[in-house]
Image (cartoon, rainbow, N blue to C red; front, side, top):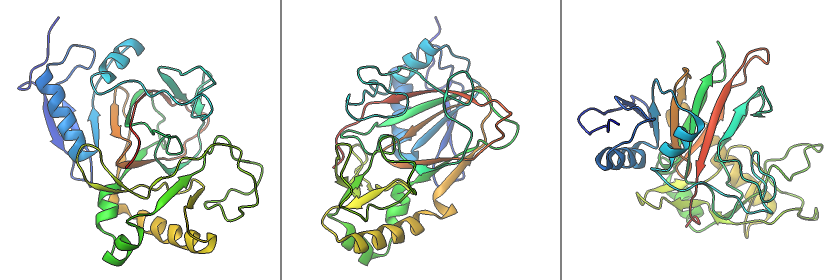
Length: 287
């Protein structure tokens, strides 16, 4: 069985705030340690890797993902996408057909598993079918978002902790809120505060660790003050200078660093098919 070498694999950074395209690599075949190390170093610096023209079974996708880490397993009492107590799908069907997950609507900028005690370190998403229009995914560079804050804001948020509430356990019949203002409403899930400014565990870069629309609360701040601060930070996040827009092709695998990015999905026509497979990798406690 052939093994890819460093000279055969080309990694080209995108002309964008993050991302690199990897060519010359067949993810279904064994890969040399030198290539894996280069890919890990590039992910650390560029936050997402795009592998083109891949043809993989679920088992091959999983084997490729295991070069980069162990499978993400959520706690039994903290639901995530596609999870049931005691059951963790190994490869998740992110699709609007055949019992898949996430539907066809817009998905606001978010990081996966942010509300869990140890959010995933990254995910690999593999495109099997794509719609003719829409369904693009955007990734946002959270280190760049942090670095472009003014110094007063950096000082203000340096030591703050943020609770991100589990969207799979919130009351979706009520009006969706982006900040928990009413503390009289009892919690229906465990909460896990994480630093609002996170240190990346490999690069040491500072990350503005905040989703764009998920309900949150800043620990220790009065609700009005916390909500005002989060709204200010989210307005800062909502800038094209921070993100890359990916138009999917069949055979693409995108591997993103879930610790340093947010991702967003465009809506697409419900009459078209969008079929993806996702593997998420284990992470550590944010610090």
